[in-house]
Image (cartoon, rainbow, N blue to C red):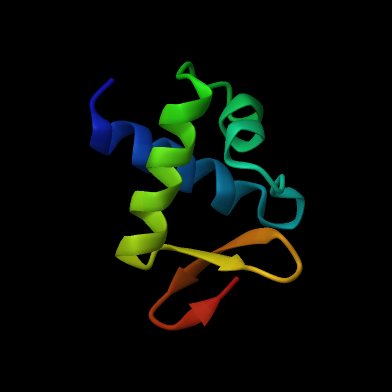
Length: 72
């Protein structure tokens, strides 16, 4: 699986389970039935955050999807 396929798989899982997104990237990857290690899951989330596709609420500790400035 390429890096872009992994990123797409994470976003697909999050969009299909918008109300039940786990609070940790490694748990999201596990729940999405993806097979990569904990450090890679955090790296993937950092990329999604930097690109603006994922929103992180720092004080509440949860993630959401961000599309055209709208947080889901």
